[in-house]
Image (tube, rainbow, N blue to C red; front, side, top):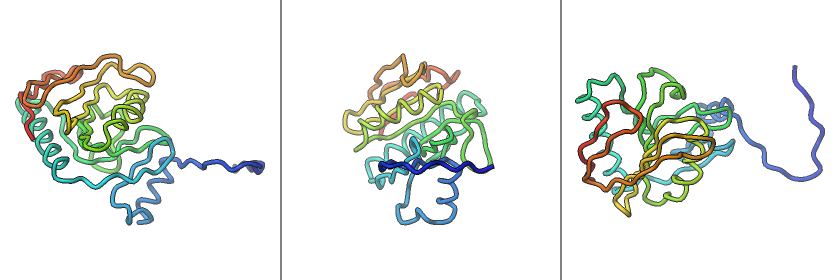
Amino acid sequence: MMTVQEPLNIPHRAKLKACNYRLLVESGALDRYARTELIDGEIWAMNAAYSAHAKLQSAISFALMSALRDAASPLIVFTAVSIDLSDDATPEPDLVVAEDHDDGPLPLSKVKLVVEVSDATLSTDLGRKAALYATAGIPEYWVADVEAEVIHQLWAPVGEAYTQRREVAFGERIEAATVAGLVVESVQP
């Protein structure tokens, strides 16, 4: 049954639900923006990925795939896939380590590690996105900082924050805190 709401006498933002966002994507209504994601009920158009970003994303993807293979892990690496986080959030991180899934957005229950490559979005990736992923309970989150040449590794989400973190310089060994056996010997863009 549909409920009728009283009109508000002040302007306000209308927030989208994930199911309505997916309808807009599928209809082509957002095609002119190339890449979008739903964060807290708001549609965000994402920056174009330039060479430094794409190069680092490829290097991390390759390193993660190699490390998963070496660990004989059944997990796989998804590139730029939507995650069905909540009723009002369908982000599209650069890389996701998850259990296999065939169709539609990745269910949150299959996500083990999220990676964002940050060249112009560091404050958003370490702020709003970290809070979003922590709130959803994503066990581990990495932000590859192109400028500083480090990976910010965050894990142990509680509420809107990750309680554990460390920085690992590009070229150094990084061991996942929450994915058993996942050890990346080196990330070099």
